[in-house]
Length: 64
Length: 417
Image (cartoon, rainbow over all chains, first blue to last red; front, side, top):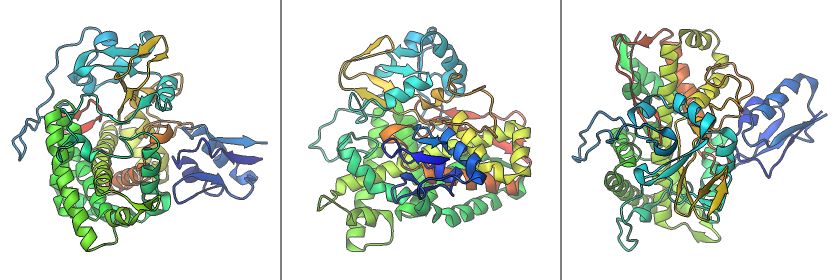
């Protein structure tokens, strides 16, 4: 399971970073990206789904 | 606009906008109508069912979308829709050779389109990143504690005027590096621009000029004595190897002052209104403060304060209506947040809602640049209030007043505890 942030769509709302800080990092401008290769450990699966479900830009997806 | 305090130090008229009763909301809505200001939700519900993109000729004319998908699509419609004039009622005639002209101190990036928007937004984003914002947390927390200490022994407070309204002016002053003791002035200026000024362009112009003069003096001071503050940072910044013009810096400071104050105090006030009138929700957050982050998101969804406007640049067909160049379109994010097609039971405030793609801060390139700071202020303001005053309710016979039009929030909120 991987979390993917579409950098073209991200507008820096930072909800994913607040909800899944173990999976998402943000740059100095607040734009988000997945940490590492985006692999979601099972214990962070719920946080990953919350990040998806709370992004107003639909910029985040999960690939199983 | 429902400000009841009609007197200002400058003798300008701050009274509520004069409106005629509305009989047909689909063709003749009025954003300053007292019923709309106090409770717009049933009006949006009706429009969403029958006329999802309403129109009015009032206040120089505008369009009002009410569906989530429509509002989001319109917010992304760049460059067909421009942000150069985000207030519905146009500014006074604008002679740009006049140093007092409205456009000489605009408010970039909110009032700009690409390409100016792109670099002017990039200029301020680092100051509002999650990490940069965290640095303001101790100041904000101490401020909230001091304010609460000033009224907690009284057993009653106007939670809008004496608490919510007091927080953002001082946080923004702290961020910009200007005198926090001028908070009362800032409140008056912001009321002049986004309160009374929404319907009275001459009032808006007057306070815009005051704000420009204030920041031009601050800029001159920082040039002589740079400090560790945002004004100095903006002056030190370069875009394509050139310093940023002083008037641009003044415009951006104008934005941070105006947009950073009125909006956030409206959100804090609306959250306190909700908690004063919904004891179970208040108890939920008192019992488990870890639910505050999610709860604040739901309160932002339910009571989103801001409705900026776009202006049409090219004739555009949209959902069966035709926008003509010059038409104003209201970015009705608060209405979008109540759309049943986007949110389950949208009129139920569920502080534990898990799926919440609310658009209180907008979407697309104009997403509120200060959203992290606004969230921090809300979380600290509400968290500290609940920690000190876990039980409170509206005062008996309390007359709660709301401001509205393009920024909605309570202006008088008498509570007892």
